Amino acid sequence: MSSAVLPEAVWTARRDRHLEVVADLVGPHLRRRAEGVTHPVHDFLFTYYSVRPNQLRRWHPGFGTVLGGAESAIYLEYAGYAATDVGVTVSPALLEHRRPAVEFVTALLSATESRRPQLSCFGLHEWAMVYRGGEDAVRHSSVPLRLGHAGTDEVVESMNLRCTHFDAFRFFTRDAAPRNEVPLSRDDQIAREQPGCLHAGMDLYKWATKLGPLVESELVIDCFRLATDARELDMKASPYDLTSYGYDAVPIETPQGRAEYVREQVALSERAATLRSELLARCRGLSAALTK
Image (cartoon, rainbow, N blue to C red; front, side):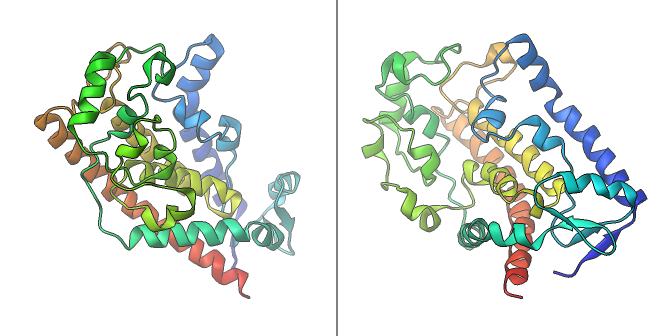
């Protein structure tokens, strides 16, 4: 990765635009949090992924880019940055520290990209997370089940569970897990991940943030937007009744609902493929820098 020097006027304009974008994206969450109000759809993006709004606000240029001008000195207060003769940049020491993450993410995204999308899961993972679990298994206690417990169980029993994403599968109830077409484990995550999976697309945001300042913030935000849209489909297709939050159900218990789910799933997987390719290109560039 060759270094490019950004003049102060250029990078501060990118930073300021980033701050405006993030303010719009996280503003509703911050207002709800201040009022003590929870949201069963969007809170997930700040709890499961555990990236705080202040972390998302901080703009990073990505590894291999030098920030020029006097204002760049503020980045020396942030972990992972170092001064050069012409400005401030993400340090090679941070890249070396993140080597395991770079290697894992590269392997996972490369394997995922190489496979054909599977589009037959119909979002049943959320149903499997409450299957025969009673009230204790309901993950969103403030939201009712559209079909009740018995109706939810009937849907799971009438369809095949084909989850390929371990981080969804690990939340299946004890009775649901054996119903999955293939048992999943953390050890075979790279072998099972596939690009049609809604959560594989959502997790591009996780991998981009885990690489931290090595990846430019604009790509992180693009992944966040995808994760937001995927999460909305995820929950519209879930067993929960979200009409009070403004969401109409995608009733995957019906042929029409399944067809609608697949149409939206395909659109999201196409967006994810583009972002996966971009993030994988960054990872390969970082891997090349590690070999120098």
